[in-house]
Image (tube, rainbow, N blue to C red; front, side):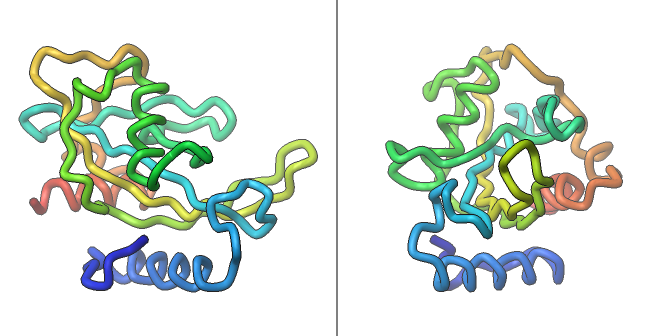
Length: 167
């Protein structure tokens, strides 16, 4: 799931990595939404071809801008495949319109508030960087310059941008 040689970007991400590893070791079905404590999710950090902007979508339930992503489905061969599927579903892109080396780019653990009959729970989010191919165009969302995103008050998005800017 997380390569042994994965290098956390900062102390915050190091805590997320440790929490994710402990979660996966402790539960029998980490990707299942029926796991009450939380579950694995996959996200796509989509950058434009020159690597200066990231694509964000408006999340209605959480009322904020986020990278595309969501729950893993049984047909997803891996969290990366789940992130790619979510990216295509949420942006209107096809698999052929994005590039990715498949390497884990970021790890984040965040609490999702209770909603309806679903109690609050954690999303153990595995995030992968995707690059938009020249000529492709997502249909929903907006581009935000990485320099602007790096200054966001949302630590998780800021870290994604700072990582991308750092190379």
